[in-house]
Image 1: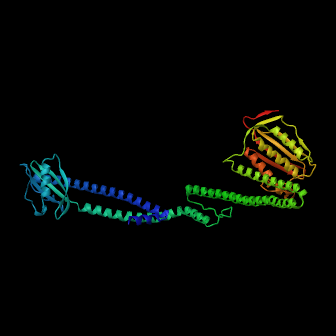
Image 2: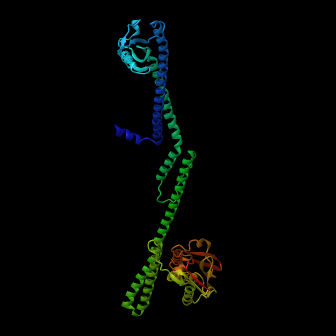
Image 3: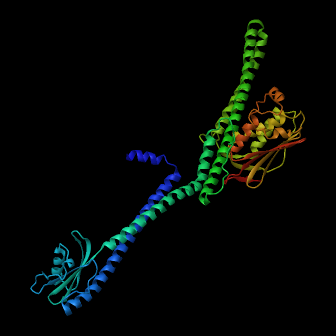
Length: 484
């Protein structure tokens, strides 16, 4: 039974639970108030009856002392008994009227005997057989004579009973109204929470696997500051979920595009390796003089595929830099690294004049010299690959706001505005056909940006016809040494 009640209670809505709890609390309060009020009323009426008994006995004692009789001093439905206690025993006198005494006078006799040993009047409540509850009071009329009077308590019990009935009816109606109207008010007050629950159910009914935005929001009003705070937090949570879904969707799209591009880029050298391998086999049997040429091309394609795999592995390690960083920082001279990259560029791209702008004689800071040199080589190679022969290229080193900057600029045709935001994406090419013909994989700028970010820096791009500038910004370490 108790288990069923518990299960039924758990199945109730929050508003009903609160209404029932409020009803139980009100019932306890009503019970305490009713009990206190009833007890006070009973005590008050009993005190009034005691006063009436005392006043009646004063007149009755005077009548007995003066005239030896109670004639004219009796009250309706009261009982009276006069005892002689001169010898230490309570001896009942013959009543003036048989109706003055009840059938059972044991309580009267016991009270008269108790009064002989008491210094004052004795008052008790007793139950007279066949008569009901009475209030008994014993007082000394004169030495050796005790008067015991008994007043009925029926009126007190009737009054207290009526009071209890009124309290039960009044409190019952108040409790019923409190539960009914309280439940309605609680339901109205908790309506915003129900709306949030419906919103959450709406969210669960949508497929979130292929979407970046939640189509629902909770825009209700009312419910007080606490509910408004909860509503604000709820909508903010939905916004965070939205942002996470957008990021996840974009990441999944980038991953799909990356896998597709990587598969395509690897397929090309693999097909070339297969083709040159077949040619090499044919030349070995039919044209031995062609073997070295096919072998060289076979090695070139294998090297190209190796470079591509190295870049992919580096990017993967940079993405997981929190687990294992691919950098090996040490104190190095950035100016010296730029000069080395410039010398290598002049050797490999003699058709592009290179200018190294004047700057600091030395700029030492903590970095990975091999990776920064890779960044510089990628940016310079990118400038040569995407500009016509004879296009000037310049390199400049400077410092600004506790950062070291390397500015690589070319006077080529520039990058179209639609491509500027995607040039750092992996496998993205502004001119796909020309880039692939020249050996580009579309990973150079992506690798450069990831390496610079791993150093805590950034790469900025500005481009217009006749001026394309990549600016590498790396923060200076606390122990960096600068020598002009």
